[in-house]
Length: 381
Ligand SMILES: Cc1cc2nc3c(=O)[nH]c(=O)nc-3n(C[C@H](O)[C@H](O)[C@H](O)COP(=O)(O)OP(=O)(O)OC[C@H]3O[C@@H](n4cnc5c(N)ncnc54)[C@H](O)[C@@H]3O)c2cc1C
Image (cartoon, rainbow, N blue to C red; front, side, top):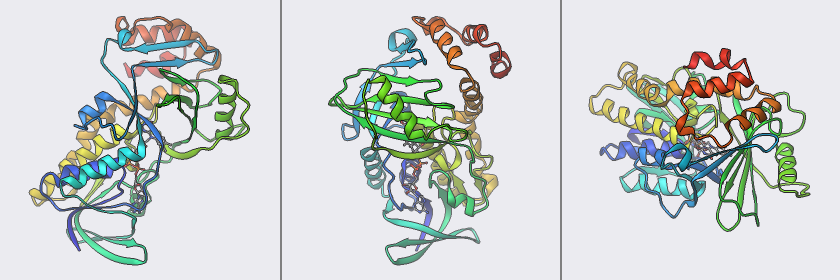
């Protein structure tokens, strides 16, 4: 079997790359071993708009216009459309139905999708790659001019090909609670989740999705226990256990090298995940769209060399890559603060109109509370 492009991974990144290429009348095959359900996730309206994605009722669970950042002592910094003068909307989406939507979108322009199929072996050949795929007990080879690797974190495929994958990651545990009404998204910071945070996303029918993002090193108790302790204390419950799904996300900005002769790497596999909040849906799909555009151009120009594909790197860096390096530093600063410092910062921003603040004003407030901010954040200005 032959294809112009073969994509390993049918998550949001692989499907977006596939749609972009198939829309240009090229022949694309996506192989995906198994969709990994991440339950409810948060994306922003502007991100979906940048990607020309329709907001569809098949995957939309709720839309919210208020976010609250909560300190250990429950001081709240509320951010809403009014105090940031923006029309931004947070969408809580069902990850399974969102993937189904992206899959049908890619199929509608001619993408060939092979579900329950694993790429089990890879070989660099003249002018492309040969990939051995396995579906049930059946094995077959596909020869492709360009290979796009979108197999998520920690990208066993790119590692097998000699590319360095990311080492630093946050562990995620996520669960559902019902019979609680909330009309805003909350993020909680401090020693309730060391080197990380806890989020609450209201879904529909009085159901909440709660999650913890945490770096696993030096923890006193398990990540799941941190989440359970928070739930019992914040909602005054006495649960003994919770049913969780779990996963990992890369949090160290982009990997050094994410292209080569006849190959492009995108999505979580390339570290295209916001290193501060760990959200990767929008940025992974943006990276994948650029990978798709550059792959299309390369095939039409009959040049799939790394020199031609280098353009992909610049597109990613200029869109979000350079920002990710700054966000990784902000993460290190934010997660080094003590509970007391976080409380003081929250108090100093309570009721403030963010529209009236510029970055220097924000930094001045932070330095007043935690002088180390000047060393950790000063260079970012
Ligand atoms: C629990 C959890 C909650 C999250 N919540 C949010 C959120 O609220 N908002 C947000 O923006 N981001 C969130 N993220 C991050 C977001 O899900 C990822 O950034 C995004 O899914 C990355 O997409 P991807 O296509 O690169 O990788 P993935 O979604 O991981 O998809 C990779 C696909 O490749 C397939 N695959 C792997 N190896 C092979 C192989 N050898 N052969 C064939 N197929 C293969 C896998 O089966 C999988 O389907 C969350 C992540 C987790 C784990």
